[in-house]
Amino acid sequence: MSHGSAFRVAATLAGLASLVASAGSSQAADAANGARIAKRWCAECHVVAPGQTSAKTDAPPFATIATRPAGSVPLEKFLMNPHPKMPDMQLNRSEVADLVAYIKTVKR
Image (cartoon, rainbow, N blue to C red; front, side):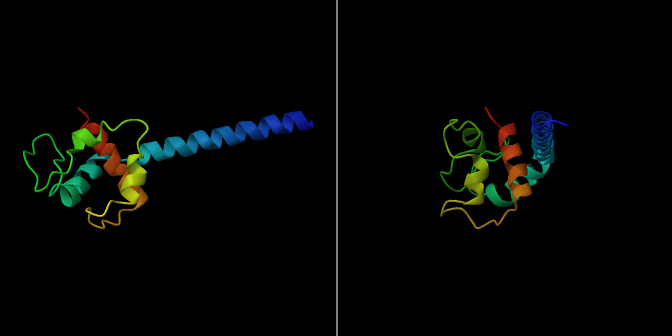
């Protein structure tokens, strides 16, 4: 096999590995579990579901959070490093992905 052929094969394998990894991570998000997490950890301060009529603070509703501008901090990163008013939920990456998947379902 020539040097150029070996490079193309390696590049193709790297590309396939990247596609498999990204497909696996996007399939791993479970919006139903995210809804359970939201109701447990977030509903006291945020309106987390369409049927919820109030929350204790002026925290933005999930429907508003779901429409954040494209240039803002990604929700995954924001939730892994919560702002001071948020409880220290200590969610793992999978739970954060589930919560973000749920937030995206309540987008207006």
